[in-house]
Length: 370
Image: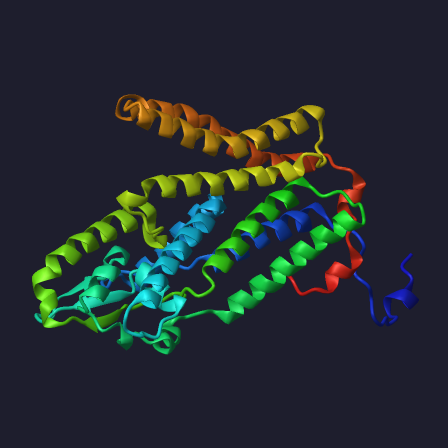
């Protein structure tokens, strides 16, 4: 029989339950991954003819790439940061004092500066032509204003605030679980790797304009006309290769920096793979699954560096063109399978876990989160 006194009674403050369910565990991890990945993306300036839908779909595409390979976005952010620092050094060493900030360097790296010649035609200013334009004074860079760039930048502070609280809550509850000796699932450690990549991208892209829709056009001097083709050829190469090969994120790839590009990418990929080693002693349903996780984590951390070394050796012995693709396929396929296994195992392992997995750190619940 129902107790009518309890049904019609009133209560005051009710504490949150000290447990969590499987659904809330999965939901909190997936939502953290989605929020931090989406908010971390800082895409380049879109094409002049790109529609709003095209721009949105492009961001969805690169979100999907970053969702599958978060280390890619972190690596792109790092390479753009390096290129921005190189551009900033050029202006600091220039004989004429030109007010400069890293935000303006990012503007060039992301294809946000166009040059208009005397005929009215415009071309993109490629990062590798900045020094030439600066030395010959073909462009008055003093017309670039950080304030104008920031005004056009569409930093969504609402999204960033949500991401901040979500990431803070997740990190605090993971640290709290470790401090109180509560078991941490492989899914949470897997999510932690995404958070680390997102925070890395945030740091490197700190001064990069967000969602800049239109470029800033600078008029060129009359002497620029005879040298236009030099800059234009570089601009076409940059626009075609960077946007086509590396996409709208643009890693600042140039033929001269091929060694550095692939080395840095191998390091970032290996570091993300090594993050799985944090789950060395995580809870798994069977000993076999724990062993496979450990093997997969080591392989995931070592494969990229091994691939880079093999590629350099093949290039040194001039056999890369002959057997490079088969070797790359042999190395790549097992790596993809390992990544897929690790991604699937974090969910499969939840079928049998200790009860303490669903105990919660009480004080972490008071931090706003999704």
